[in-house]
Amino acid sequence: MAGYDPETLLVLRNALDEAWALLPDDRKSESQKSLMAQRILKNAAEGVRDPVRLRAYALIGPVDGPITASL
Image (cartoon, rainbow, N blue to C red; front, side, top):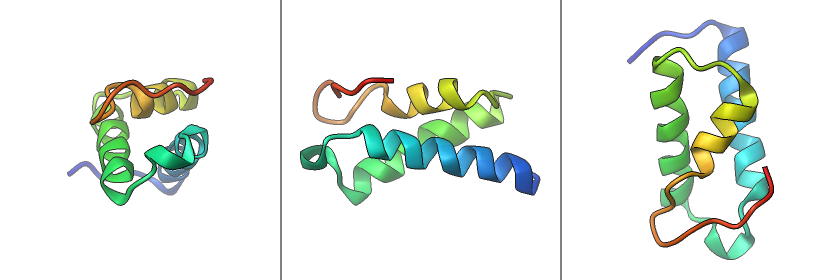
């Protein structure tokens, strides 16, 4: 796993929190949150640091159907 400085960790955590807040309550589960975090980490490992892009990546490709949330 890649090591991240505190500033980057804050960006990643905020992206997850913001994406999670956009998710409808009936779609929230620990497994969904874990999947969203994995997507963020995968993109961060590829060099993505833009919070909007990270948030969008977290919301793309839900496990059980499309997510309808405003980015």
